[in-house]
Image 1 (tube, rainbow, N blue to C red):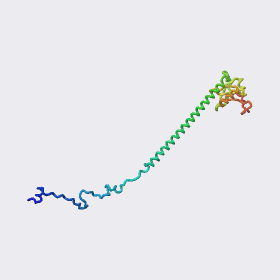
Image 2: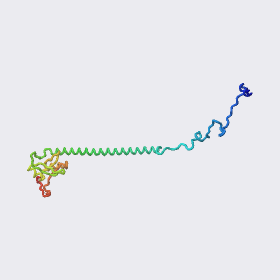
Image 3: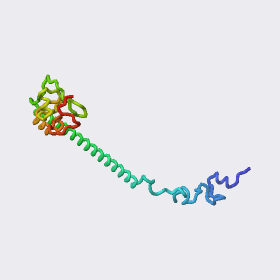
Image 4: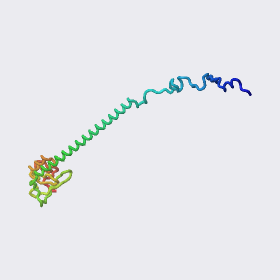
Length: 205
């Protein structure tokens, strides 16, 4: 089949091949390759997709106000804990000071009593008369001689306690010991006191 005159001219380079024009899409009316979405909708530059707009603000309790409230609460708790610690430390120190003061006073009284009783005790090693008396919720006894017993019952002599011992001493020494430590005086009879339960004071039992 012979070529047409147009084809011969094209081969010879005497004419140019015409450029095809973009024809509209049969359904959308747009040239092929163009965007199918109108501007301003969907993911284009015109805006965010409908219903997915970014939310303003911050979640409840996580914003500056929530963080400030949490921080203030922690500060208040730390202050309360520190205050409690200071109070407990002060109370413990007060108890320790009072205990140390009591110990100091007790030691001081013991030294004074030791000085007062030095060489003043009238206890006799071979005394064989037991004089009983109540002390500390129990019945105690001190051994005296036959001559010392009436003097003890008459109030001339007295019984004092020092360093775990019952000492037989003169009345004046016993009263001086009582001034230093009221618990030091154990027995001091009053001859003018009424007899209780018709039991004589000089009874040895």
